[in-house]
Image: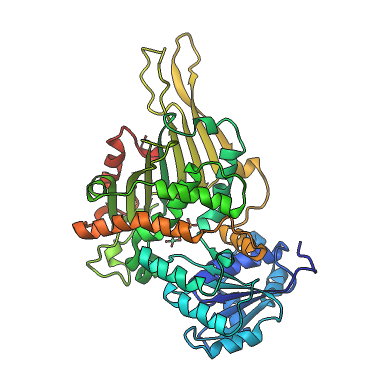
Length: 487
Ligand code: BG6
């Protein structure tokens, strides 16, 4: 419940009328408000270039955001009370003088959170102007949306510029995957239980696969997406963050820097790819027309605002490995794509075969022990084990221990953005990326992106509604592995 003693809070959203704001941020803030997780003296100040009044902005949010709020949580009077917290400042982010209007609107003495949901090219100017207008005090925080740069040098430029005005502990680099319930639960699974950790390493693990598959296409974001591609949009951030949590050493505490130090070590231990590795261990794909879950889907090249000869990838599969004592030799397979057969984010840990089988005349089961952690659409953990088939012979077959987390642990599950926004207001940095982590992720991704360009690599076509190009299965098969849904 909100505490009347809490200091006033101003959440200032640059890009307040943008897609991210009305689809994700305002619905998340509404949920936080309706569960008493925002202080009573909280204002949400949308920033935009439209000549709008406070009422116009509230009307805009009232018209656009409700479909993005869980219908069972949308209470008309709570929603109206939430809208009363909104304010609006018309501001051109490049005009220093406009920031005076913002200064005049902010509550004196409030904790200020500046959420930069704009093109990253504006981050530098926004921070400089906020500073000149006297809006940055030691309590202020800035939230930076991804993508932070398109390669290491551009990320460094942004980080440098922001660091001139905010200290590192005031900077919240958001990766919304770190706010997902099951991603946070993965830390508990690994470090709150004794049974997995001794086996969580080579040689007991044969391979790890991480899939983030989407059924959606690029929709209205083609202009942005075509400049970005799946590697920068998903792999460099969301998939690497998942990999870090799977692979990191136990942190000495949950303090932000203790957790982030361990993730950084993983990123730094990721094998750098040479051109030969890129050729052998990466697959880029682009969807062609097909059908996703019964609905016909156009080819990427015919989507609005996509150039007809675009070479942007909408799918990536790759094999990497972590060169440290725990993981030496264990392949990590990462895969993400748009317009795939099903929406599914999953981490699959394949444990090694028993070292010796006394069941000599049994056919070898490919994955006797497999842990499948599903992040979405449902949250579940499944452990595959071998059991004896009833009857007189010693016949084995795989069985599953299924844990449906949603029914096992009742209770409201906050959406990632709600959880992370509340963390920002409370000054909790654990689930945000530190500068060195972000830069280490680019250091790994850049050679791959450059390699593709150098080799003139063209994405392989895959039919919308499938699991991607055949080469992605071949990548696994070479090492006796297979993607979860294919085995
Ligand atoms: C975003 C990407 O970061 O994550 C989008 O820019 C993608 O392209 C989205 O669709 C996926 O998030 P979620 O939470 O729906 O899995």
